[in-house]
Length: 95
Length: 494
Image 1 (cartoon, chains in turn yellow, cyan):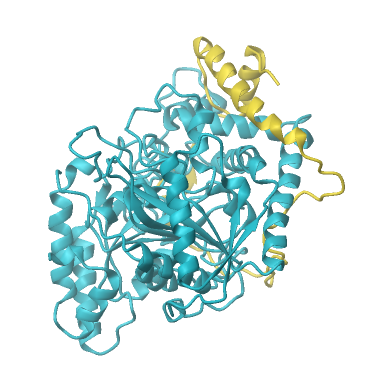
Image 2: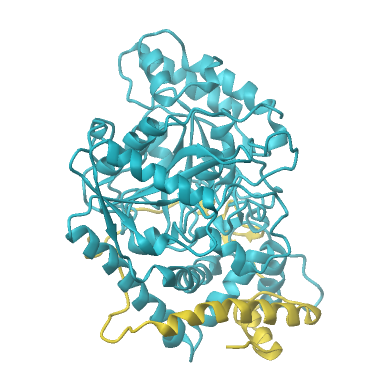
């Protein structure tokens, strides 16, 4: 599978990573190389094999649906690049 | 012998007998760290925390309340969140991040009385095999090719941990292993590293790369030390839903040195084309050592081995693209300076472009692609089905009575920093060829130093064990370690 420049641009945007136009050809080439490597998987007969969801056969643990933690807003906000009045602050989202 | 050169077991015994104090050992390590700037292993030093913890450990030892790790100075991989101490996964995107909480593994270690010397560099977000993707610049291997001064990689991603342990800057270090990140650097630096069974060690507070593959483990000077330290790191943890409800046994007690009658599998698919003759010879020698110790050697087949790397390089980036979505410049770490009129999407895109290095960006984008509409089945679901087949290969071998599997740990010894610079990303991925199957199958695997190559560099072998049988696996490794008698140390140049 070969990735063209338009696909590379689209993937970069989906991943929310700004990639300059001048670097898209190299990115497309590298992604194509990696995908070609993955294509070996097409040789494997996977008929009747379920995709693995958990490497150890175990049921995920459950617990009562109650509040067990919390109440430290200051700690949550402490590492934020921009926090105001008890909230995370970001550029305007809605016009 | 300087105190920083002690093994964990020797330090424990000397501490218990009162022959030495934790403060003395800790000071020796801090001095060694100060003198080892050229290795670039530590990215944050915490001497004040270390001395306070060492003092407290000495009081505990005096009071007769001393677990095995009490007073032992350690280095902690930068991937572990440590309260109030920079924890940034060697990435610019977590610049300035100081967690308000402690990872379960490090909390377990501090509860056992261990001492934190500082944080150890690594490949950014644990993505890499050479430590060259760290935002702090590459870590240097204390080993050199004889008198050749070319700086060598300590391997990756736990390269800082490997370099620090090999250079005696600490008695042991934590590592994490998603595709070989404990075992490959351990092999490159002549130390021991074990990746436990998936679910043995809590992942809570360990910055996530690929959640279905990530597992933390110890990196130490000896197998016995690995057994002691793993026992302190492991726990059943309600905060990690994949932490298994299986009690942690006494791993050290499993080191009997007796493997008579055990069946060791030698998988024929691990004999790769173009494998250096020295690695092949080492593997044969290791096989002979286990045979001499009374084990039965059995040729086995793990037919899907060749598909492990391509499956891994679908699954790991897919999980990484989801896990790393949280680095968006909102809650922690770096946020890009915005231009007039920039909105939230520009904030995300610029922040992530500035914050993530090239390899991390590439893997996030590969992951995004394989999970995107139209490709999910062709890549991601197919890889998960192949993963099931890889695990079945191992299940069948163990069902047939195999106790442990012996393979090379790496396809070569340590290479020069920068030597892979112009290589295709896929070429770097080949470093994981012998280790990645173990993560895909969730099994325990250990790398043991066995010999030196013609260049004077350490080479390791890997043993793979049954799930939850780390004690038995460590015992096999202990026998191999004793038989190999690897005692070489890097000559000090730093």
